[in-house]
Image (cartoon, rainbow, N blue to C red; front, side):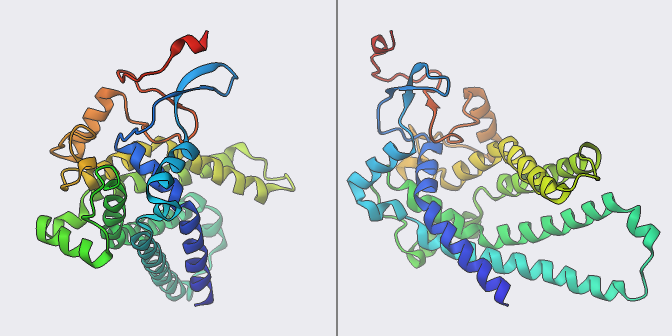
Length: 303
């Protein structure tokens, strides 16, 4: 119980700290660019025309809604985080209790030594079930969070309170409205998890020397690195999920010109791929001007 409470408190703290970052990221994902490009430098020190980054974007939001406005959508996101942590822990606890029953009378050392990959599959499957259950239950709060952020674009007040937002979605879209964008989000989580654990297993088993004294530390690093690469590869699923959650919901940010009306998440995927926008919002600092976009940027300053 103490571990669960500490996880909830830690998760809530991280959620509060990262709220402005997510707010900016979501607005960029839907294509909202209120600030013109500026002359900056890339990682190689070369002058380039680039879009404003996280801090400039956050300052723009604060200049309109104040610093408190940077935490728009925090309440439903906190609810999602707390509920997700509890559900995730309950599912894993159920599996652990099942293991205790199965462990009675089974203790074959040879089986334990030869089933390292089977153990990875077993643990990954259980983690997948726990995450999927948490995502399924908390997705309605995720949808409300996204819509309350995106309404900044059109200066609407349609999704302000948690209860009012629930009533609005149910009245206009029914139960299915609470699960807009769920399928790509689930697929992204599942693929990312399996990629991360599979790559980590391969690296730890075949690339790292088991005789190294810092073996456990190296394994933890490999898990973090493979997790980073897996999240990068599955980012398009996150983008598509967020766009579908706000698409055609009665907000300016979910309608043209910021976003076309998509018939399905596959249609959204294909259109983003065709436009070359599958990584939109992935970077919050070195943001290049998208191909095909026209801005008033004095390129003579680059010479």
